[in-house]
Structures are given as structure tokens and as C-alpha cells.
Image 1 (spheres, rainbow, N blue to C red):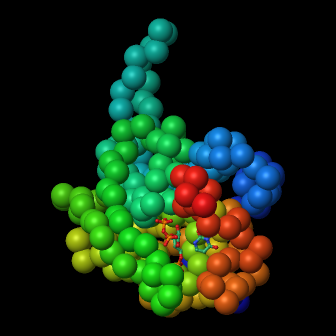
Image 2 (image 1 turned 90 degrees about the horizontal axis):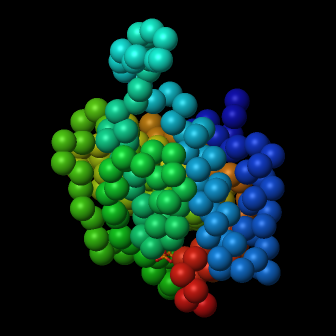
Length: 212
Ligand code: PRP
Ligand code: URA
């Protein structure tokens, strides 16, 4: 029996390679963002593998044939501000016509509890796939609160994509939302006393936006 049945950790060598440089504290801001984009694209490829397709007729230069397309406007990317913004471009490289539904919250430094400041729900959420993106799943508080809000707004098909997950966060998230699959590039060891992920990659938002 898997300890975390809702978690998929990608062991693809390209993802593991890029994540190693993302973790490295010597990596520049420019390269950090480029690598986050690239890993975001690779994870999005995995997460969308069961997207529904629709048959269309296509005329090739030689004959007419039946091909499959996705309805990309039915894919809704939900970046958890602020650090989740850093993963938007990577997914958009693959699905340029996806919708983007911003959700703003930050973790209180003392309590580590999420504080919500912005949410623009998607109209007609039925039949759409929502992909929450945030580089870090630490205590799980931010992701749980975000999924709560998405569900309250009517979203049914939700997935969560992150770079690094802590066991504590995965445990809490799968307890609160057993129906939501988590896709991560790594499952790390544990949280430290400040609820930072070890070994982790530091503060994702600060590294993306230069606010250290
Ligand atoms: C970070 C991260 C997640 C959250 C994870 O955001 O991007 O949203 O912490 O921690 P949790 O699982 O314990 O909730 P932060 O609060 O630092 O805000 P920021 O994205 O604005 O930097
Ligand atoms: N948020 C981050 O950016 N990093 C962590 O390790 C935990 C929460």
C-alpha cells in the first residue's frame, strides 16, 4: 500500500537534473526562472496525459483524415500567488490557450496559516480541468485553502502541481482532498522549525522575484 496514494513524483531524468540546479543556492535568478519554466512544462506534459480529446476532420496535402484535438480553453491554470506565477509560463508554453484564474494567499510568518487576499473564480467551472500550480507544498495549508475555494466556486476536476513537496504537506493535503492528485518533481525529507522544506530550495517567491 502506497503511503501517499494521491502523489505522483516524476523520476524523469530531465526533471531531476533541472531540479538539482533549481535547488542550488548559487543558481542565478535568471537561470532559476528558466529552469522553473522548463520543469513546469515537463510536469504539465505528465499531468495532462488523460485530458479528453475530440475528433476533428483534417485535410492533409494528400487526403482527409480524422485527428484528435483538446479543448484547451477547458484547461484552467490556477497559480497560487505569488510563487505560483513563476510556473505559469512553463505550462502556457504547452497550452497557450488555457485560462488563468489567479488565487492570492500568503503564509503568515508566525502561525504558518494561509491568509487569502485575492480570488477571481472561473465562470462556468463545470467540465473544466483546474491545475493549481505552486512550487512548494510545505505544511499544505495554502494548497488546502486554495482547493477549498476552488471547490466552493464549483470546480470538480482539480489537480495540483508543485516542484517540491514535504511529507507533512502531502499527508495534510491528501487527508483534506483525497480526490485531488498531486504531481511533484520531488518528495523531500521534512519541514524545519520555521516550516521550510528540507532540503528544499529555500523561499521560492523570494528567489523568483528577488525579494531576499
Ligand atoms: C509559499 C509557497 C506556498 C506556501 C507553501 O508561499 O509558494 O504558497 O508558501 O507553504 P504551506 O504549504 O505551508 O502553506 P508564501 O506564503 O511564501 O508566499 P509567496 O508565494 O507570496 O512568496
Ligand atoms: N515556502 C517556500 O517558499 N519554501 C519553503 O520551503 C516552504 C514554504
